[in-house]
Length: 99
Picture (spheres, one colour):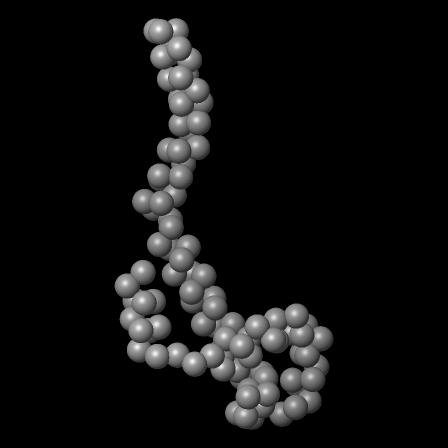
């Protein structure tokens, strides 16, 4: 009985460094990482809007420069258009502030 208890305790302690690392990450870095990812997404949307705004009816840059950058942007173009043109309501904005 006691031997089983020690074996169980030993198994739990083997994973403890990972648990401690995850707790420290959650306490110190998680919010910073989320804010950085959100900011990167906003900057990505802004960049795509300036470069390819004419795809959604907002021409800001001459097409020559847009066409030069097009091969680099093609993989993320469809998801960007879907993100920008998605309908939003008040609850979308409130949900981002609460999380």
